[in-house]
Length: 550
Image 1 (cartoon, rainbow, N blue to C red):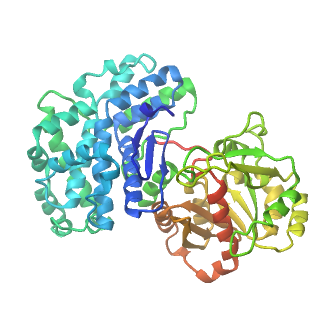
Image 2: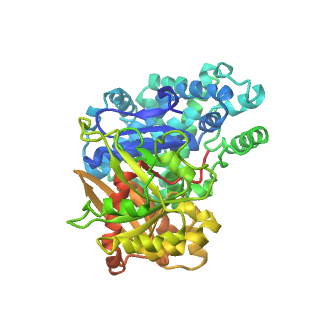
Image 3: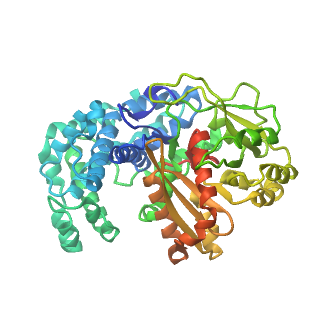
């Protein structure tokens, strides 16, 4: 979906984000960390709200249908924009403020969202504690999205369904506006403090005073207590609007109907890349939640569109000589040999027509570099017309000659995307020769659930460390981790890295460690690979093999 009307955006003068039910894309400037965190958390809340509601399930399905039926998607999205943006704006600013301090001016670069933030702030003004304010807004947004829309789709038919089939009172933004008209008293009355104290004691409430620390109050030890608080608040709000004759679902009442809808869609259209909703138990699993967020994030590394790319009619040896004259660290050059599936290369770059082999073919190995660009850059110093040239390495037998020609003039390494490794025939032919060049790095472009469980089964010890990368005044973060001889790499920013660390820690437990000494032999090569990816990769994400959620 490229039409602005078919996505939710957080756009202004700074970092930007946009969300569709396929994924959320971030273009973070890496200059002001607090703003980057607001943008990131804003898109996460869009994704989360869709993943836990009936209206979100409808959006997920219609976003993936062929164009004729998918027209309903835009109308469904329009009917919940205010609900979505209100939750995402308020929650993201408050969560970022809990880490960075007061962020009163953070929305100055995003003026379209100031009114939404102020409205929500007024609605929760009588609720004490930052944690309870967040939960109340979450409960309200979920209530607005938990309409019987999936029943309507079932009754009318998937292809025949139109927004006009849904009564105005069953549309999320209509419900949101109703609660706004009720004012702060409605949300204040939903506060479930007495229930919480009676069932769980005073500990959780004690962490959420008017000046409380949001991160302390949301510590995992209090999860059960705050889940119960949110459900009680939800039920109270549900009773208020229910008195007007409006029907809403239970807090998690969308799960069975969502699963049924996916099954009926797949019976007609085949696999559309959606999984059934996460169970309540899965949502209590921090690793599962981290994995769900990671599967949907994409970080754009360019200031504009994807890099232009083309195949060069040169030999790899020719490009070696070009790279040898380009210092990348101190006065030393670096040579990185990349491997990516053809389908992934097609997504990463803008190619001239008919220049890539069939996307369903085996992964391609190439030496690549910026080989041509216009002289006149844009105002922010970027160059939208830079060309990333690729010279294919035809066979594994060509790699030793490449290394010999390089002659130790600087770091030499291979960077293989994890999506290549599912092709076992290719792996048998290429992986050992690529690893013989020098340190082998595996770019994590698939969700961690595809490879970490095998490490757990094999009782692997995993060594991990984080790296902060400063480049042209911008700050990035990377995570390097290894379970054998290869070093896996996550390149993004600190929230994504933290989520990956959380996932690894929850899945591996004491088998996860951090030994800096083991990293020293590959430090120069790792630095070169990270710089190479920042310069030549258009984006990084974990969906190279596809992923989907409701």
